[in-house]
Length: 175
Image (cartoon, rainbow, N blue to C red; front, top):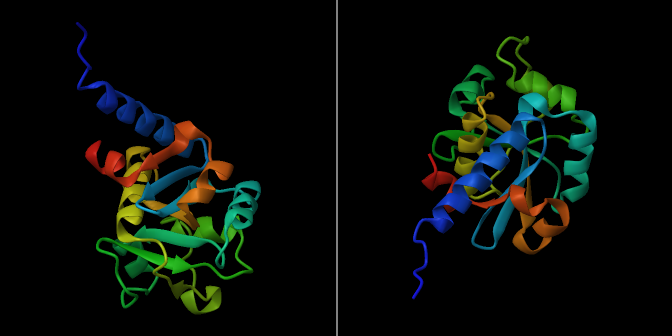
């Protein structure tokens, strides 16, 4: 008689989280899902033009979003923006580039005037997905900010390889 290993799913989930963290550290995309919602993310400090263009191609409704901690949002003068717990989600303007996204989150760069960049509050990425993405970026020891694109769960498979697709529950359980 054989017994199912009760830890096999946990080990598999932890391995996938570790793979996703490594992918973020090299500037690659990961996907996080919760229910029927999903988001693809690239660490904001490592996003380059090809990855940024790829994210925009994946976007169905609008464009890319900038997900950052409340602390960085306050430094940008966005403290009054709607909050999703400990972070802010902002719609990036169509003319935004990867360089601009990196400059916004870089604590050593000259602060970007939010009025010039036209960052608008967004709420189309659910809070559990935002929290999971922030936790992944923090686990990668990167600035707690990401460029994200909301996507229906059914579309994620076409954009992100299986080892880099996670559920928000698995990410949050691995902290």
